[in-house]
Amino acid sequence: MAIFAFGRKALNTHFLKMKWFKTHIGRLRLIAILEGVSLLVLVCISIPLKYVYGITEVSKVLGPIHGIFFLLFVFNTITVSIEYKWQFRRTTWKVLIACIIPFGTFYIDYKILKPIYERASS
Image (tube, rainbow, N blue to C red):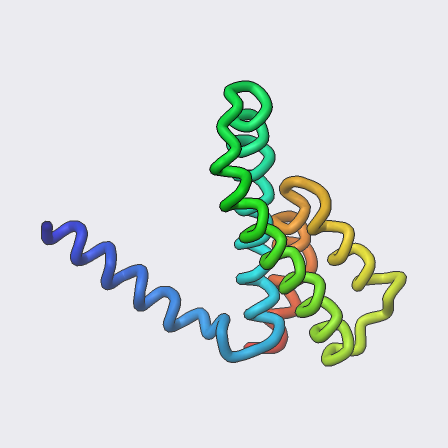
């Protein structure tokens, strides 16, 4: 029980230190991770369950959740691109395309969003 309590405390402290919720770029990074995870769960778990085993309930739940994350990602990408004055051909289109490709949002977070976030928070 003590290990669980310690892990929970460390997790809460970690999220408080990251300040992801205070900036647009931080929220975009969080949404990118959530959108990427929801896409992977949809493609790797939900689709096989639907078409191999005929279990459609998972798709009915995860599809709209992924759709919400997708729309939030697109909206926040446009917001951040305006705020940070990104050039469409250099940055914005790469970030928008990333949400269609599995693992794309994780790559974009690592290559583009994380460095911008670190420069903005320092």
